[in-house]
Each structure stands twice: as C-alpha cells, then as structure tokens.
Length: 237
Image 1 (cartoon, rainbow, N blue to C red):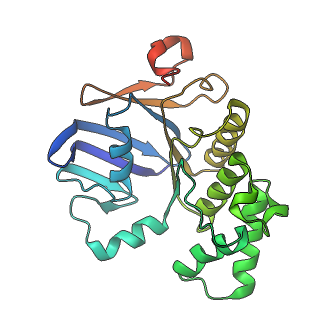
Image 2 (image 1 turned 45 degrees about the horizontal axis):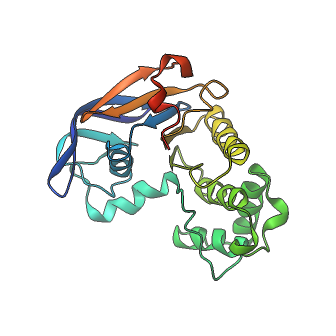
Image 3 (image 1 turned 90 degrees about the vertical axis):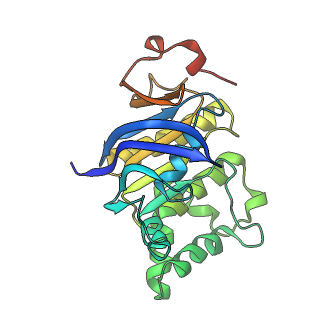
C-alpha cells in the first residue's frame, strides 16, 4: 500500500485563528477513514487543506507527493485532478443535464476525444447505478440521486483519493446508507476515501478508521465500534 496523505506537526489556521495544531497522521491507498468532530472543531478546515483550499503554513503536509506548505498556485489544479471531491450541497450545474455536467469536468481537465468522454461518463454512471439518468436535469433528481451523480463526477479522472464533506448531511438515513456503501466500495477497489461527518450511526455496518477533531487536536481512534465512542460523536445533530 502506498501513502496517499502524510501530515507531520501540521498547524491548521483560518483567518489567523488556529483550529488544529500538532497534527500527525497518514492515510494509505484503500483506507476508509471517518473524520469526525463537532461543528467548529476543524474537520472541514483540515479536509480543505488536503486539496489546497486552506493553506498549510506550519509543518509538513503531503498529499499525493505534493508538499502543501510550498505548493505553487499553478500546481494546485494538477493536485486536484488526482482527487475526487464530494460536497454536501452537490454543486451541480443547474443549467445542464447530468451528461453535460460530467462532460464539463472532462473538458476542464483536458479530455478532447468525444468517444473517450462518452465512454468514461457511461462507466462512472454505471458504477453509481445511474446509467439511465444522463439526460435528467439536476432538479429532476432526488437528493440521493444528485449525490450519486456527484460521486460519479468525483470518479471521472480515476482519482487516488476521494474527499467527502458531510456527503449524507442532506439525505434521509436509508439514502445516506446507500451513499456510504458506494464510497465504501470505492475504497475496497483501492482508492483512499476520507469522509468528514458528524454522524457515525453507520460505523458498525461500514467500519473504518476514525480521526477525531477535539480541543484543537487530531486524535486517532483506530477502528472502533459505535459503543466505543462517546455518544456525542455518534449522532450530533
């Protein structure tokens, strides 16, 4: 297994306010990792450092061999092409259908051959069980269907890392379970997956390593059961 993410003594700050300090962890290919913590604990900020949305100013942080503390602005798109990002609020383009949403990403990342693009879009839609939805507009899809399209979009460039920020936050429990199952299967295929969440109610069904943000620290909880964690981290509405 190869190391996808490695942080050593990293400090995470927002607007000069330190939200996490002395952060040390590594994630390898194929790992499924939950990043948990209360609102404001730093989990979203930490996730955003991984794709260079929030800068790293202290310590050594490396994602896919990019040194985040010294990454050049022109290299950030190269990093992000190797990462798939799943947002809670979907961020689909509302003025075009599913196929055009996915094609937009391929065009933006250098795909030029029409047949290759069509084949790749068909592949990712099949992977998330949405092969018959390519002609639909986003508003014609349920929340769960939109999130599946977002996962398909994240898979387009065959990323080595998937980052999911509260991917089930706007979904009902059963649909959320289906989304976590999809991400779990992606990890089983060898892609590292990090899920930032405040709800660990599915931890026993989909066990994974837990990193917890609390008191400006990142604590590695290993691979616990729900019972092993404090209730406040299982369902924190």
